[in-house]
Image (cartoon, rainbow, N blue to C red; front, top):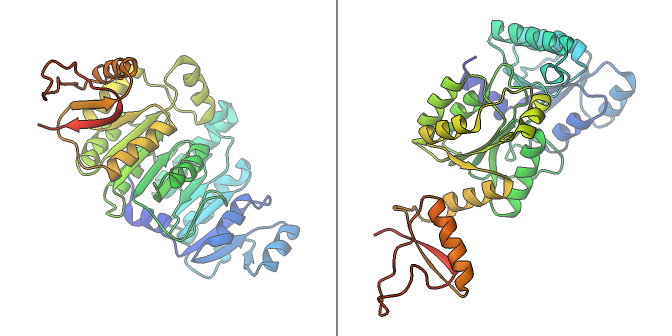
Length: 352
């Protein structure tokens, strides 16, 4: 389903949130602790209702009874009632909902696949923007909308992060923050049943507050659509992609994680080159690449000069640079016959 940016904008910048279910308080406390807008609870468990009302939050036993317009719903109910809650979201006119609920197609069971298909059919029929299921949802630090209580709030950076993994979404935000790279908006979309990665990328691409987009992906549902959006967005701002499931073991793991279909690595690499993405192989490389894109001057050219203190290290790093498709030119100086390196304590791009 193609995204309606007006609805996604309400999801990422909500003024009113309803937390549906969540007797374990996990999603509820994430929303309650720091969210700057209006918050309602939808809960039928009497014990949970008492605890929520003690904190000064209004509870209703039905989403339909909430008197205000609800921009965004966080749904943490058992999968058996997920479809009923979706129908209430549609009837209420909620712009979008994050379904934390898991147990769908990623289980590879007949019942899980059936229930996810019903969710998809109902949401697409109503043009409803369902985020997930099986995901951690949205992080907007400026509004205090969090995926986990450990995340920061009160300010925003320049990075948009799109992740199929909830853990990677949370850990990326925390680790990147420690290194001076802050989130503007982030989404963990899990199974991507209704809205896949291409729709979030298209939305982040038109968001002027986001200067660079980072992604953790395990697979894509609509390859042609994703490549079209990637080409369009990467022409305007950098897109850095970390692909999970590059080997046979990883392929098996992603099937049970988000139910994604594997893509042969050679095909994926070729598509990323065509789409203009910068590819990385892990969290550390992703953050380092973002720091370079955000804080270093633009690089024009492919030549690198090396300086430092060890000949052996210089040889090894020269080899690595050459294998990455870059050139180490012979330096012209008072000593015209120096090798293509001096020694290695700094790496400098040569643009002439």
